Image 1: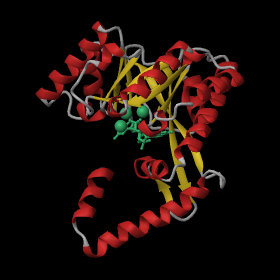
Image 2: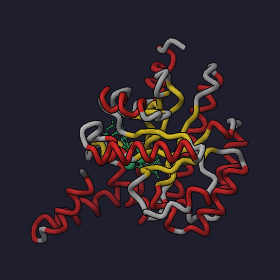
Image 3: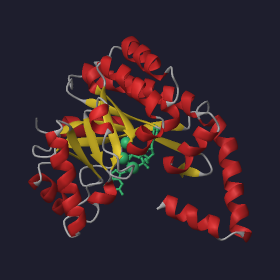
Length: 279
Ligand code: C2E
Ligand code: MG
Ligand code: MG
Ligand code: MG
């Protein structure tokens, strides 16, 4: 929705144009201080086993709470962080926090939990990224195969050379690799066999109108079948209704993530969810 609104706002120039520019400049100034002022946090959204419904792990999602502006969506501030060159520093902080959190959960006995961390195309252009991730994982001492790196399909296609080499390095360290927002990027599927992938996350725009929209049903079923034959695990994003879950189970989807199970929550709330389930 935010993207759609943004586009409309650019179209009507006069007063709203300057409002857009004003908000942008305001956010830019505040964003530079967000990390040092402790305004950034991570929330964790459960990833749930489709059939057994137990929590497999969490996706770490960045949150920015400004004392006056309130909550600003990552859809709005991540692109700004990229333009301002803040994304590398913030990305390093996200990685550190998520790995520390994962180690705590593992130490509490939840050793099977995995955490997935989002990376943008800009972050993947950094040739030192794999070395940075290796340093953090080894220093904190988390099991690499319990850490999944999420990269959007469009980011994977953007700078194939550097992306491929980083993905290969990460894979050789033992990390898991997920394609985020699958189905919204490019139509070329060649990268699916070229890159060392573990997981496809079907974009929630395909899930939204299941099981009523016949085209979405066909596309989703085809994506799940393709993932299965390529030995990739498949996650449906944005599952909000039981009818969607039922359709996806019938098509043999592996995992769900969505408001039906939980919104993204603070780390201690996530832990409480994990500990409240009958395992
Ligand atoms: P994403 O990686 O595709 O994350 C999933 C988004 O879908 C999250 O939005 C989540 O809150 C939302 N979502 C989950 N379940 C449902 C549902 O059932 N219904 C609906 N309507 N939405 C659902 P969020 O947290 O606003 O994040 C938006 C995007 O911002 C993420 O999309 C990701 O691309 C980016 N992002 C978030 N954290 C980070 C980060 O640490 N680093 C980077 N580079 N990007 C991040
Ligand atoms: Mg993601
Ligand atoms: Mg996604
Ligand atoms: Mg998305």
